[in-house]
Image 1: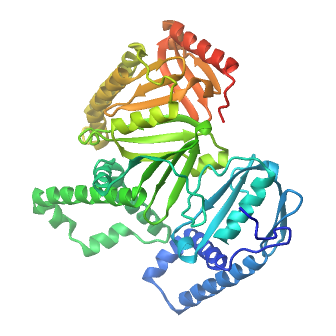
Image 2: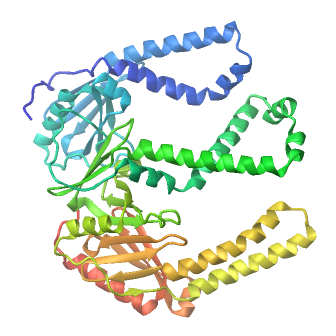
Image 3: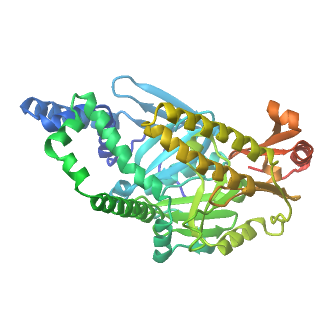
Length: 495
């Protein structure tokens, strides 16, 4: 891209950065002052209004001053940042330390026709710095200036919908229709959505207690709970049904917001996915950075025969924290096969033979759970009215079934190119990664495993640690030795 800006001179952000700085400041204050804000709902006087007015004014002044005292420039292949309202600071970032250049464009940025730019550097826990608002052309020009001097990969994660960005033309492997989107929403884990209002209620109660407001007393004064409890079981059943419908609606809405217009594309040297209703996201992963494929279903997804899939890549600490994987939903098994065939090409990725963990894995878990069950039943004789003990007794058989299913489904297989780990409890879970991209492998034994000549094998990848428990020791050593041989002899780049 032709450079149209002179970054050798100190530059400022777009004026749209001012309201964004103020918004972020207000957002931080809101989290800190939340108990005070909740208390003022019940007792808002003239003094409180004056305090709020002063805080709002301070935020506006701080945002304006912060904008004018934040400058950046490029000097001798170094990015120089000067900022600070009360205390000035100078940050010098050599181009060689830059790991990734990230663009982000939320709905606010879209409305203001600007983008947020984040630059991550080697060894940093968070973004080294961020520019809240630049015009599209200026952001692209700054990135081009940096990349022209340093041959680094383009941004591993882009949360953008930028008019001037380069669009890759490739094959569409999967596109989520609205009907498919409804299937995804209806087959999500509704338990998480059901727990959301409960967690919100507990959080609200604790927050109110911090300011000496008793939520239980307010409910007792305004609602006749005894009449509701004694009225009939019909009301309770109706409440459960309404709550279940509410949980499903939450899952459906979250899925629509996240995966709206999901499109998965195969580009020249990688994959690209775009999705999002309010915040448009576009994530690109190069083949060389892909570390593993992870796909799974659940009990509900088995009905329409769809899966979710995650493609994880190697990335810096910062990018891992923000999330740089490709997340897909609503895929059929055929879509998964096409994706793998497109990536592996002529390399074999289908594993024919699998090894199961030792039966001692199940036996040990069942023995532990049985002892807990006996202890719980014994405790029930001494504390017959303890609901927690009763709940534990009912839960333990479920955990036993879960342990049995885990033992039956957990398997590992490999060929000359890949390692495939299967798992899951009530669902089916698959991990597939290339052997030559493994960074390290280790065998670990507990005292019990040592006596039974068993071992757990651990694979260290740039996308995380993966384990296979309770293998026969000889099998575990055979897998370890082969992986180490591939790591030492394979000359292909894994980054």
